[in-house]
Length: 238
Image (tube, rainbow, N blue to C red; front, side, top):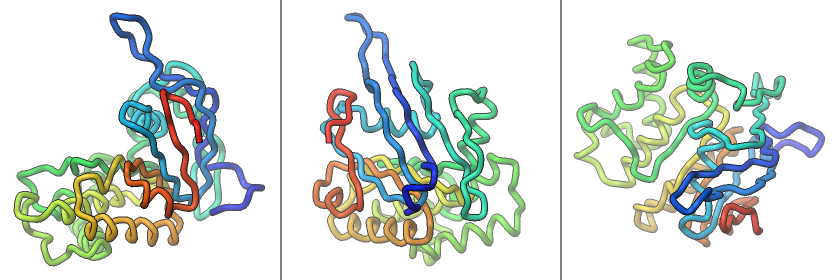
């Protein structure tokens, strides 16, 4: 983690996200302020409906803010560059920014069922227009080795376990070498052994400079991260 004299890699200021309902606006996030440092491992906890996934969506630019700011300080060779208010980007700019800067890990894995594991990991560079057949495949194989699933590289997702699918999802999220990973309940569908393995992998990624934001219902895992926040009714309460 960077020292307190460094700017945060992510800064949320007065963030509000409201949804229209038949009974009026529903505040999924209500005046959220938080700074996240480069190289930080942050746990996000709270009951269902507390706003955890919405918070990840605001940080990753998946959903549009109702009001407030999300400021990103880009990482370049280990240093933080000028601030980018991601809400100022248009749709195409935001997609490109997210592809370069944020790896998203879903609880449900979201792997393409007809592609083998190597091909799944090669998708993000293809999306950015940086796909090169030999180099992209070498990168995918290196990442599958990193997450200890290389031996299954040419299988399709239906032929591996849930824990193995999550490892592939992590490899895919790392394909463009983003400085930030956001993980929405990454261990929620896994047994305790697989969950522990994924958590240890996250710890190793943080040790190598990644910033990880992990939503979890697992209080034991949340207690092991260096810092955690708790959401309730769209507010940070702890």
